[in-house]
Image 1: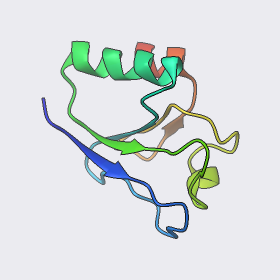
Image 2 (image 1 turned 90 degrees about the horizontal axis):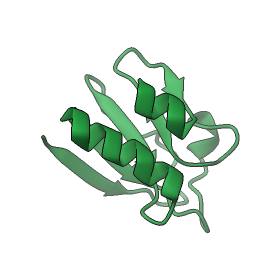
Image 3 (image 1 turned 60 degrees about the vertical axis):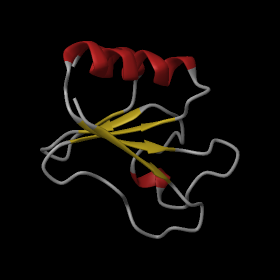
Length: 90
């Protein structure tokens, strides 16, 4: 399984995601995000990891999750999932 990590700058105007794969928006300190990460590791699903600084959220993050919380998952089809349990079951 391969995953890459990209630190999301708060002033970034682009919306980072993996076009042909899964993009998981997470924060290492969030237990709900850890649940989603564990599910991806167990399932051995490749994904791109985008770390979100919860104290300094990127300006574009509302496009991913209007609640501005982690985790969030963008699927290859462009669907967005924003609940850790839903992401884990997906």
